[in-house]
Structure formats: C-alpha cells, structure tokens
Image (cartoon, rainbow, N blue to C red; front, top):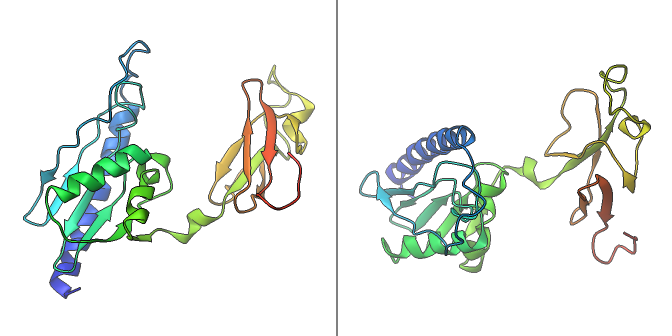
Length: 222
C-alpha cells in the first residue's frame, strides 16, 4: 500500500473510532424502544461518503432492541488502490453480511482487511461474512484471552449489604454465585480473576446459578 493510501487509512480509522465512541456514548443516553415494537428485517445500511475513498454507515442511537435488530453501532471502510479496508463489522452476522453487500454498491475491489477497534459485541459479531470472503482480521491481541470473576477476596460491603452471602467470597465451579464479570484482563479491585480456557463457555441463569461448559474434546463435564 502506498504511503498516501496508508495515511488516508490511518486518518479515516481515527475519525471512525471517534465517531463510534461518540455513538456508543449517545446510545447509552437513549431509552430502549418499546417491547411491543414490530420485528423488522435487517435495517437498510445507508453508505455515507466522507471523502472520495472513505465511507461509513451510522447505527441508530439507543440500546439493542427488536426494532433496530442490533444496528446501534457504526462501521466504515476505506477504498485503496489495492482493495478495501473495513473498520468494525457491526453487531450480528446478518448485519455483517449487509455491510459486506453495502460495500459492494461502492466498489468491486476485494475486501483485504478488517480492523476491529475493540472486543464489544456490537463491533465484531458481524465478522463471519468477511472471514468467508477471505479478509484478514486485525485486532488487539489482548482480546484473545478472557478472564472471569465470580467472587471477591473480601467484599467491601460485607457488613452492610443485605444480600451478602458466603458465595460472595467463595470460588465455585457450579451452584449459585453473586456476580459474573468477564474481562480481557484482570482488573484492579477486590474481584478474584481466573483465565478461561480457549473455547470454554460460562454463564448464569436468571437465579444466578453458574454453569460452565468445557472446550469440546477436553473430556470435562458441564
């Protein structure tokens, strides 16, 4: 890629990153759409040009809802002489495919690279359409490893919290827990962190009962 093209990509990515963060902040300030909103197909993606080679699509303000079908984040792309560089791929596989098709209304050049800004689902869950098309994905390596916390060393509210229970300060592979926090790195504070194995799944039901699903082929039990 020529230096002028690389400069364009870097400047475009900086703009799109700031737009995405502003969109996310604005979205948090909006109220959710009514639960009775009609279910619609994937919203139409309107490609907006910023320059002759830089384009973006703007998600709807607000949290994920039945009405917006998960389209509440932004994405963009840069058309270079060698192909297309995409920045973020929206929040569902269907939206990712819609974005890929929207790019095709602008250029037939191959989609070479996808740059993921961060690990939030609304920015990378649409990756499959671009992987299937042969694009190379660029992302921060910190998102490869996940850490989980289900208890604290000592809860700072243990003497005042009406919901305090032994589970708040006790490790558990199953049963009931007080919280479930996932992070790409251990965070400072009272939480106790452990690494998740690659392809391991973990979750809780409505009663905060923990379930862990070991990686396929590991021989572990659920």
